[in-house]
Length: 105
Image (spheres, rainbow, N blue to C red):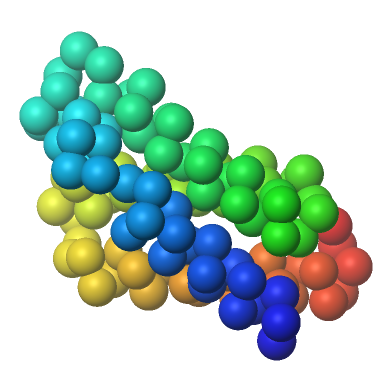
């Protein structure tokens, strides 16, 4: 459970502590059609770095970068709500824990 708490802490830090209004606006392609993907990638890499730091797994870090980017993109495209976005992010953390426990990574 310690690692799960650290992953949730990392998620809260990445989404609420390290992400400012400028990043929120610029990572959305509707607000920034020229370079949104750079901001979304940077935000996703921050999350991947936090997952990698707390788990020691490069594979989970890369999976987090990909999943976080896809989930945030879907939210910004209006495919689901903020609450669903957060639930999906937490679900990813559960999967990362299961992968660690089963020694897949």
